[in-house]
Amino acid sequence: KAGVTQTPRYLIKTRGQQVTLSCSPISGHRSVSWYQQTPGQGLQFLFEYFSETQRNKGNFPGRFSGRQFSNSRSEMNVSTLELGDSALYLCASSLAGFRTGYNEQFFGPGTRLTVL
Amino acid sequence: SQQGEEDPQALSIQEGENATMNCSYKTSINNLQWYRQNSGRGLVHLILIRSNEREKHSGRLRVTLDTSKKSSSLLITASRAADTASYFCATVTSGGTSYGKLTFGQGTILTVHP
Image 1 (tube, rainbow over the protein chains, first blue to last red):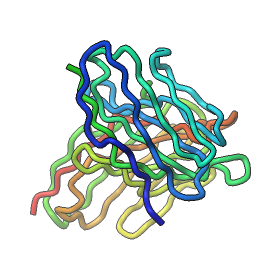
Image 2 (image 1 turned 30 degrees about the horizontal axis):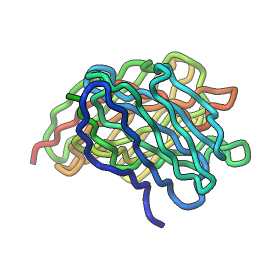
Image 3 (image 1 turned 180 degrees about the horizontal axis):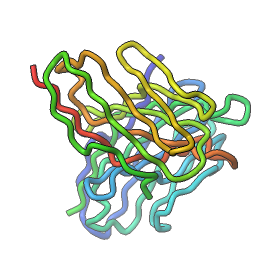
C-alpha cells in the first residue's frame, strides 16, 4: 500500500496570503488528522476528519480550516497568514473509528510552510 | 496544548547501550503511543499500549505503562546509530470520540554515537 502523501512538500508565502495544503491518506483509511509542529509549541493537533465530517478540533483560530472529500483526501487551509504560522504541517491517516477503535496513525512527510 | 512532560529532553549514548525515555500525562487515556521522528520529517509509529496493559515488547523496544502514576517509559535496548532521532509519546484520551486525536509530549532527542 502507498503511504500518506502530502503536497506540496515546501511552501513559501508572505504575510496576509492564504495557503492550501493537501493530504492523501492510505487507501481504506477514513480518518485524517492534521498537526502543526513548531520548535516552540511542539506537535499540536489541528483537526480530524472522518467520512467528510470534522470529528475533532484543536485550539486554533478560525483562520485554520479543513475539509475532507468523499475519497478521504483532505485539505487544510490557512487564511491571512501570520509569521507564527511558519511550521511543519503533518497529516496522518488511520482506521480509527467506532468499529475499529483507537489505532495508530500513519504520518505523511509533512509540508514545510515558511511565512515571510 | 501538550499532554505532559518527557524526560529527559535530550539523551546521548554510545552504540550498544540501552536508552530509556519517560513520559508523563495528565488525563485518563484509552492508549498511549510512541513515535519516532528523524530530523524534521514525518513521524513513524513504534508501539501502542492500551490502558489495561502494563508492558509491551516489539523487537528491541519495551514500553511500560503505569496508569496510577500517569506515566510511561520506552526502553530501546542495544542502541544503534540509526536509532538517532526524536521520540514522542502521544496519548488518546478515553471517552468521547477522540479516535483521531493524538496529544503529544515534548519529545526526547536521542543521539547514539557509533
